[in-house]
Length: 374
Ligand code: AQP
View (cartoon, rainbow, N blue to C red):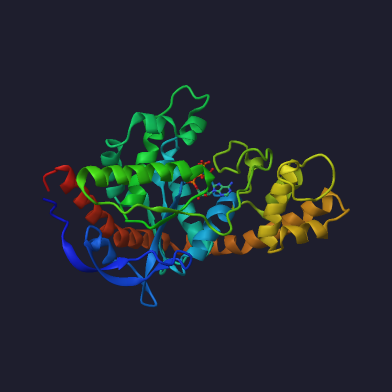
């Protein structure tokens, strides 16, 4: 008998209106395996908000790519969704980290969440390692994951390529990521191209578990943000801009000084020719810079192209740097205020306490179903 499964009169998400990002309330008869999580779910105008979860690794200094591809979307999502944003420090250690640097980067990433506009009174901001249920469910789900599934993961292949010794954590990382998502009965997971495969595995694991042990996990859906630009490296537009790239000239860090930003952009690789036109196939480098320009200036790509018609790359790059600096300078000011306030520790603690209750309930139900004595 399934201890947690019972028929009850309950509030249920009806998934009628995906586009509006929240769910209608309807009275229905159904199995109540996620009743407990609904108890914590926030309402917006009488409607359940969809729960969104995402994380960023403190594996280096956050880049403009992280800002455009993730943080900007997080900020937009927090108004109409119940958002859980975490610093995934347990994922960061799947590649070697120096302890002092990890500590600094973790606090820095959390502070940049807030400096970017995430409001801790709207969204829960926390560290993955502050909620022990992540590691525990991660292990339980690792036991449900097939080697073949992990071997197929392209991120593992990319990150392990050419390395002599590869930590086992890098291999089982997707099972931990599945745990991160499933712990909170997440509705939506914002995903870039590189994470689609991991979310697919999460869905497979949830379905496998539900089939084997009874309905336990909600099956999460991918969320493709409206502004989903992928920002590429400044030195090679075939690779994404990445905070762990050993060449700092390949990325703009959110904490780079204005002069560093100007220098990096003036040295950025550009395609042959001199036309500022958006053509990712034939002119990937200039198209990447135009994407950054459009994002930071608020102009459309067409307007950017029209502005620099017949002018060559020089002026374009100079102006681009100023637009980036204009976005980054106020963010850095807020960042300094947050760091010097000493408030971040309290914010993270409160965030972990809030989400920890939901995580504990899910973990308990998983363990009960798997046959652990509680
Ligand atoms: N270049 C990018 N363009 C757009 N979005 C990006 N993201 C990362 N790089 C870009 C988004 O930022 C979030 C952070 O993800 P992560 O820290 O978990 O790891 P990642 O995607 O592997 O990011 P990095 O910066 O490349 O980290 P390292 O170098 O440690 O692997 C995600 O939402 C991602 O889509």
